[in-house]
Length: 131
Image (tube, one colour):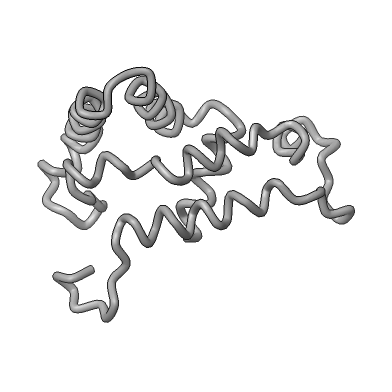
């Protein structure tokens, strides 16, 4: 953002806070207009989503960028290609500094987000894209 002279660029902290605020919306009762009866949507019913896990994921999903940097598709291709490896190394470093069991939980939340297999990870990714 800074390189492209975007005024008032957001920091990782700004972004993760905004994601956390959006994640809190999932804790609200379901809107009667939403259809959770379909197989592809039933897992997203607010009563089926672990809102605490989603909130933790929203707060920490980009924590690795504090060490690895924020890599976008517009960055140097070598950075884009090594993004996941660099982020995993950053999360391992954070895990070491924080210590377990919290470090293990933070790494697990990051891995779950990256794997995109749970309702919480999928929701967090959607929140990430709009925040």
